[in-house]
Length: 361
Image 1 (cartoon, rainbow, N blue to C red):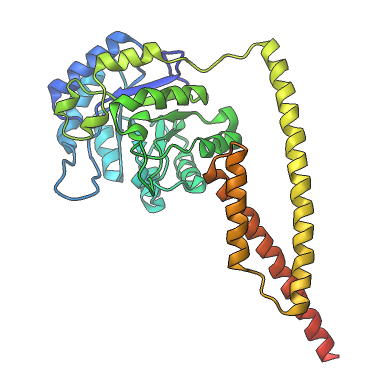
Image 2 (image 1 turned 60 degrees about the vertical axis):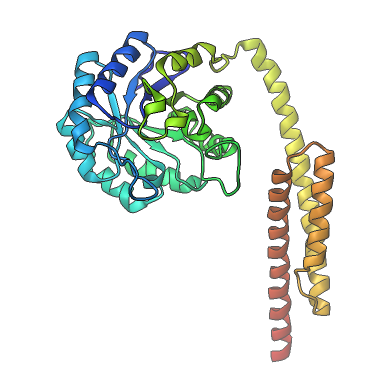
C-alpha cells in the first residue's frame, strides 16, 4: 500500500486535537482542495502528562471525523492507546491509526492494540518511544505487523530531552538511519516536525532536514486558528502556512547515473577509512590486553579514574581541534573505554584461573 499525492512523499496533516465539527469539516475541505495531503490526522484521546489538562473530546469527536472522511474522501487517522479506542473508531469507519510515543514505550499497551487490529486496518503509524531505544521502537512495529495490517509505517517525532535545547524534542537522525539500514525500502519512515520543533517557526527547518535525509513523508499539525487551539497551540501551522511550507520544501534528491558513479567513489573512500579505523582499534585493544596482563601480575586494578579523566579531557580537546562534535567524541571514548575495561577484566579472570590451577597442583 503506497498512497501519496506529493513528491515530498506521504503527507499527513491536521490539528493536534479534534475540537469541534466545524473545525474538522473546514480543515478537511481545505486540505482536500489543495490535493497534496493523503491523510487527515486529529487527536481524539489525548494522553497528557498531568491531570486537569485538555484530554481530547473522546468519542464525541468520532462522528465529526467520520463525516469529514465521507464528504471529502480524505482518509482519517487518529491516535489510539487502548483496544477500546480501536473498536470505537472502527464503528465510525476509521481504520487507520497512529501509536504515540508514550504508548510505544509500553509493550503491554502495544500488544493490546495489536490484538484488536484486523487485516483490513491500516496503515498503522508507530511513533518512536520517548527514549532513544531502537529495539523498543522495532518491537512495537513487529507486534503491529504480526496482525498483517495493510502497512506499518515508522514516525520519527524526536526523543525526550535530558537538557535544555532549542527544540521541544531531540531529533536523532543517526538512530533513524540505523532503522533505515535494517529495513531498507521495506519500511517507510515519516518525520513529525511539529513535535520535534515545538514552535511553528522551527517546523520548516526540521521538515527540510527530513527531506534531506530522504524521509518518506511528513506528519504535520495544522489548525485553522492555532492561537485558539486547546492543545499544542505553539507548534501548529495555519493551512496557509502549511501550504507555503510544502511549496518551499526541496524534495529528496533523485539520483542519476553519473552522480551514482561519483557517489561510489566517495563510498570507496569511506570503506577504506573504516578499515583503517578498525585496524587501529584492533592495535589499540592489543595494547590494552598487554596492559591488562601487566596490571594483573602486579595486583593493580583495571580502572583508574584520574587516567580516564585525563584521556577524556585530551580527546575532547583534540576532537574540537579536528572539527568533531564533543558529544560524539565523548560517546566514542566511553564506548572504547568500556571495551578496554571488559578486555582487562578477561585478563584478570584468566590470571586468577591460572593461579588457582597452579595452587591445586
